[in-house]
Structure formats: C-alpha cells, structure tokens
Image 1 (cartoon, helix red, strand yellow):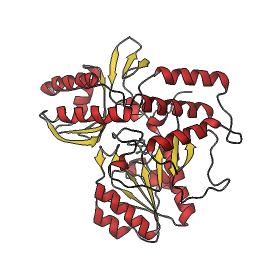
Image 2 (cartoon, protein in one colour):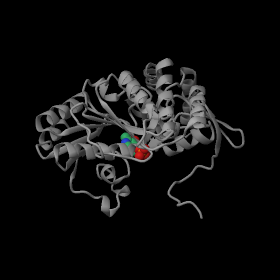
Image 3 (cartoon, rainbow, N blue to C red):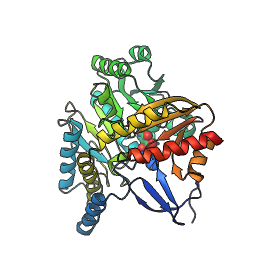
Length: 375
Ligand SMILES: Cc1ncc(COP(=O)(O)O)c(C=O)c1O
C-alpha cells in the first residue's frame, strides 16, 4: 500500500523538536514560526506536557464516553476560568472541522432552521457542513455544495444587516481569518453580527480554531471586540499537537442525551494534553507573551521595505509582500532554516508557539532582511 498523495511535501524530515525549534534527520536545526498550521501553542515537547502525557499513558489511554472521565470536567473548569466563559458548556471532539460541524448542527437543533451565513475567504474545515460554509469551491465535492449557505463579503456591515433574518439558522465567522490571509474582523462587523443574531434568533458561531487559545493576545480574538458568541469552536493549539477540538456552548442551549456524540472526543490522553496546555499557558503567562512578542514583530516589521500590508493580532501575523511570497518563504526555509506559512500568492503567515521570545523573533527579522535584499 502507498499513501494517497494529497499533500505537496518539502523534502525535510523532522525527527526532534523542542520549544520553537525542530531538527531534521541530518541534525539540521530549524526555527519554527508556523507550528504545523498554528497547532504548537506552548512549544514543542514542553516538559510538563510530555510528563503528564507519559504518566497518563501508563495509567489509561482511552475509554469511551460511557464512563466517567474526570479530566473532561477538569478541562471544562480550567477553560471556563481562563477564557472568562465560566457559564458556558463544553463538548469535546477531535478536530476543527468536527467542532464546526457540531456547532452548526447544534444551532440547527436549537432554532430548527437551515440557512447558514458565512463569509468570503472563510475556512471552516473539510467535513460536510463545515466545507459548505467554506468559501473555496476547489475543496468542495459535488455533494458538499449546499444551497443553505450564503457567502457574504467579509467585514461588510451592511450586507450582514440585510442578510440575517428570521430564516437564518447561524452565522459562522473567524475573528481573524487564517487560511484567508490573516484578515481581522472589525469590531463593528462582529457587533453587527451579534445584534442581528439577537434580533432574529440566529446563532452566532465564532470559529476560534486558528485565532483562539491565546494566539491573538487575548484568550479569544472576539474578546478584543467585546462581543460574546453563542457557540465557539476550538482545536489547533488546544492540544499542542495531540488531536482535540471543542465547542463552548452558551448557557441558553440545553443538552439532551444523544444529541451530539463521538467515540474519541474527550478521551483520557486528549484531555490530559489539553489540561497540560492550559496549565502551561496560565503559569508561563503565554497569552500576555503572545501580545508582547506580537507587538514586537509589528513594531519591527514596520520598517521593512517590500511589505505592502501587515495584518493580525498577537502571534497571528500576516505579512503581505508586494512580490510573490513563495520565493521568500523558500529562501527562509532552505537558506535561513526558518519555517513560515503562506496564504494566497502574496501573504506570509506567522503562527509560532505562544512562548516565542523576542530573541527568536530577532532571528526571523534578521533573516527576512537578508532574504528581501536578495529575492
Ligand atoms: C479557522 C479554521 N477552522 C477550521 C479548521 C479545520 O480544522 P481541522 O483541520 O482540525 O479540521 C481550520 C484549519 O485550518 C481553520 O483554520
């Protein structure tokens, strides 16, 4: 058997990782400013994380959601406290797409409606309802095209006012679009969505899969705008690499046995990983660090020539270059040994660990200066 060849690969094989660094099989060191698509939140192989997971694996790795798993309640308690959403409920799943799938389903159970409003360049995952709400026809199979979904221009306040009505089941939006190129939702846009949902009984779903978990310099990016969504989806940084996702559900929803479910979601290992992540985020003040080091990047990148626009918040940074980004990214990776990401043809995405230091930021800034002088 061979692998189903869907991923274009770099000829690099990481075998070891620590903090913000990776080493390949030849011992070459790389600075990681991408965290494998925004997944590494507390740093690779953090000792607390490794110790807790190792211990848990020795005790019990898995049992289904038919028995008591106290680490789920521990996680709900910790997540409620650190996010300030103590009165929300938690439902645990395995990925970002699954979180959004359940968020949309729960909204539809709640108000009995079908129409979903999503936004240009939004990305919500590859499963059926999530991909239907994603603005990218290239990743939709014929069965995924869904006439329940209306895509509106991102950040268009008037379009939101016009489109949300009493037929709207849910509005799904990323507070900072990731795959769409680090586009930040305006405060007014999010507030207008909140108001229109309140008026019509539609459910406000905030996709925090990429922009959540401290990345923006607040625990959730919508907290910069002072709005409170009805359902919040998370994944990526939640497990620092161990697959786990969730939805945070406002107290207005009432659970019913059998309403939602999953075999693997909330298993012992996933919850142990997620609890370790939250303990480290709290102890090492990583949300504040994301804000501080993010500001440092924005301040220092301002002086660079060749940059058309800087976007983002905290350690979710989009650098739009005047020229195509691919040669810049390749020179950073192959010559300077730094991992970064891209979105579209001109935008570089930086999504490092929330524990990144200003010293590590300087390594990138120096390298980018060298690369831009050559390309
Ligand atoms: C904002 C957002 N939502 C959902 C997803 C889907 O997450 P997953 O790949 O874990 O299914 C992603 C993945 O990139 C994402 O960035």
